[in-house]
Length: 273
Figure 1 (cartoon, rainbow, N blue to C red):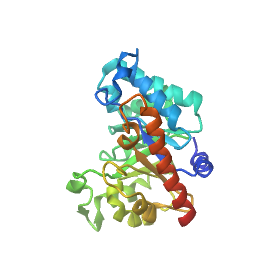
Figure 2: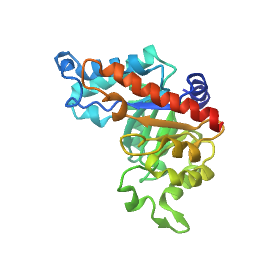
Figure 3: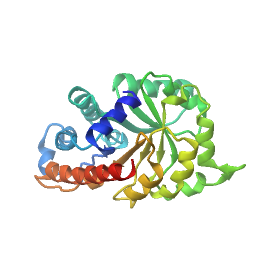
Figure 4: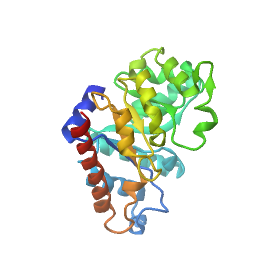
């Protein structure tokens, strides 16, 4: 999917919501546990109920890898279902990969060719030869960890390196990499005050913003500093939507939460753009 297609979908749905499919078998409704594939059953119900309100889905691969081969098969079935039924929706493999050349190439093939995700999250710590193999894929996107929402982000990411903080150095240097036009960036919602500076460095790139809702990030603050002329934001919510209920009405309640966020986003777009 191209960024132009993603932007068009945002305009049509008046939404820049991304829903995280982080499935924990200890949290899903108990009646699903009797199904042959409870993870896929849960995801399918969430997707069917919420796809009208979002423009992206983001499975965190750890929640599938934890269940071994069956979990990976559930992930494959989920992305296949999305691609078959909702090809206009942007898909993100939240895998946070990061290794040297040949290994990165294999990770990229796994997510872009075998599973056919539109994008994958990547850690930049090992530098350009760990990221450029992902960037080589046409109409696929590499979402670089820039400034994350966790408390430990202050351990390294905001430390000054030379004349600027490390996260700014990561962003600045990444723009020099081959096919850097395929880059997007992760910026945590709990770091909203940093977004103005980040937008100065990358005014046109898409930002994936986790941390709104359960982690305490403010949608209004993120949009105030992070929106650009083409919106340029994907706001992720996981637990606040998918675990809105653990009863028989779980999909209906997830849809209600997604609809509330979409409505807020529509109002923000009218006000700010």
